[in-house]
Amino acid sequence: MEYLQEITLLQWVGLVLLFFARRIKRTIRRRRFERTNAFGVQGFTSFNAYEYTSFSEGIIYILASVLQLGGILLLLLEWVANGL
Image 1: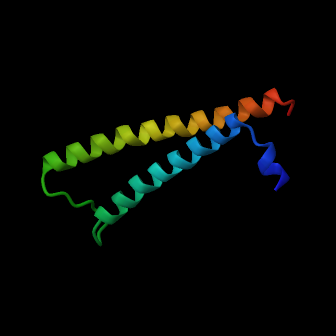
Image 2: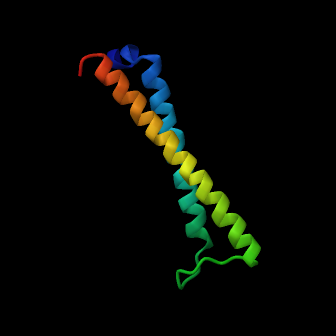
């Protein structure tokens, strides 16, 4: 319990960013898994649906990766600032 009282705001923000980024990535991977059929091929209603879904999921996945990297950098920054 003492450790939770010593966590700074910067560390909390880093942990929250990591949590949300991992959650977003997991959601995208789960949606891709649920779209696959028994042969491992993703099923879409049309080519436009495929393009829109692939593009939007790709952008969101990249943004989640940036959030995840930001969370890691915040945690590392705080760790280095406190003297390793």
